Image (cartoon, rainbow, N blue to C red; front, side, top):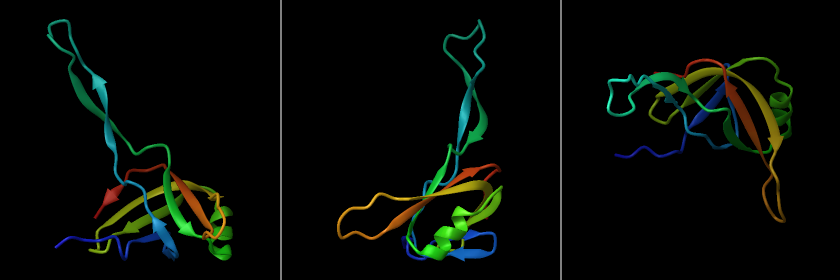
Length: 123
């Protein structure tokens, strides 16, 4: 049976954030390190460190209290994404918040951007 997105949760520390609409890709790709020697007939690579990307963007429906609280957050914070089947991804990172653009007859949303400063640990 397929797992659907309903029920995904994001926590800042021990506090569950509300009105979550979208989460980014979670995980990283190993950077390639070239290790080619003069004896090789083609380029040879090995895995380097993981790259999680510059920033992880989480989208929320606007609610003033949570928006203000996140906007005032400073320093590295602990984050946890929990999937509907109970799997979790935990990491730390600094955050920033911006109100998204909006048009006529549309819901207000904002984006929480988190710059990871630790490994992502899946459990």
